[in-house]
Structures are given as C-alpha cells and as structure tokens.
Length: 298
Image (tube, rainbow, N blue to C red; front, side):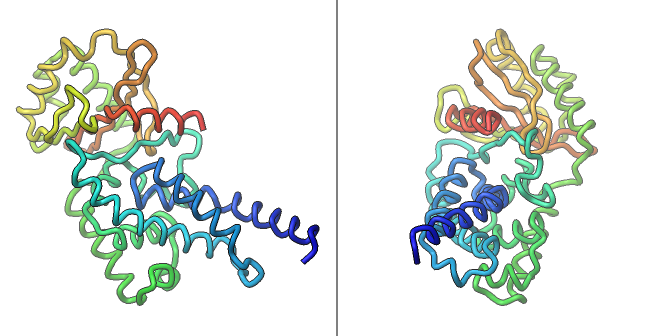
C-alpha cells in the first residue's frame, strides 16, 4: 500500500470512528455507570480500530460496537470487585444530558441514574444484553454474536434484567412532575420543614450519599420516611446556608446542582413515582462532580 492509500484508509477509519463514537460511549457508559471509565473504553476501542485489518471489515459500526461492549464487560467485572471496597454507597457517575439527551442511543432507556443504580445488581453480561436491546434496539441474534452466546440465552439475559428492574421500581412520572417534587423537596430541606419533607417522601424511601469516604457523608443508606425526614432536617442548619442551587439535567432527568463559592459540592437526583420520592441520590464525591462538570462543558 502506498503512503497516500494508507492516509486515505486512516482518514476513512477516523470518519467511521467519529460517526460511531456517541453510540460507543453510550454503550460503555450504560454498562459501567461511569463516564470516566467509559471514555477509557472508547479510547481503547479507537486504538484497536487503528490496528485492525480494516480491509475485511464491511460494517465498521458493528465491529466497533462489538469491541466496545466486550471491553466494557471485561472492565465491569473488575470494577465490581473495586466497588465492593468503596467507602459508603456507590452511585453511578452522573452526566449532563441537556446537550445530548440520548447519549447516542435511539432511546433513553438505561440512562436514568436510578436505573443505572439498579443495573449494578446484575452481572456484566446481563447488563450488556439489556443495554444493547433496550437502549439501542439491537436484534437478539446480533447481541448473541457480540456476547458470544446463543440467541436463546440472550433472550433469557434480557428477560432477567427486565424482571429485576420491574421488581425494584414503580412506574416513573413525567419530567414536569419529577421537577415539581424535586423543587418541593429542596424547599423543605432548606428550611428543615419536617412535615413538608414527609409529605413528598414515600413510606419506604431510601437516601444514598456517595461521598467516596469524604467526611460528613453517610456511609450507610438511610431508610424509611421518618428516618430520612429527620436526617435531612437535622442537616438543614449547617448544610444549606450559603449553598447556591442550580436546576440542571442529569441523565435525562431534572436534578439540583449545589455549589458553595462557585464550587460544586453536591448533585441531588431523585427517583419519583406517583406515590412520591422513592430514592434520594446525593453525589458528593468531588471526582464524580468534576466529571459531571466536564460532561456539561462537553
């Protein structure tokens, strides 16, 4: 091959990769629940694409999807071990979806932070099968090829994932209703209004604080309306003063970004059903907040 042909080949490879990149990131992010780790996977996929024998590859996106999914599954297996030693609750790394609401997917499925949190309970192969089917609408046969398993087993993997999610969450509400409950919660939390807090929380609400071991973050989930209400009210006097609240979007849902002196200190996301707020998810880990800010800039 002449130098000119090599340059043309690399140019085509670059164009093909750039076209597929949003989808590749979307797949890796949903499998891993971490934007930082997903970026690393996409970068590794690019290196493998550069070094591949591309002459025999007729569907670049299919090839890149397969590489990305398998890399993400392998990475997820080691990530599960690391997260077992994580200090306190581990929550998915939020991303700002206001500029790219579907992260390269045809549907926004498996993007909600609450869904990503529940998907952590699945093994990486189940999670990948669910993501490829529900978020990207891949045919079962193609997913089976990516996962190197049978179509029948792939259907079982997706079915198990669906059952897990349906058993763990109620039907979500509209974005407007979600926003109203979030605003009502923040208003009640700022003043420590116990009655107002109890009015927006479900009986079995759970509050998770992901601080990655930082001081002041609860290292165990707080469970139940009375406990969560009192916990939030108790922190009102010292947590909310001098906190600026900005209404943002995280993973396709309304969220509240709390800052102090211009520095983000928390991102609050909630899971909401017709009954009220089911989960509170406080991302306090500075690294994850920095990642959210970076995704917002991107």
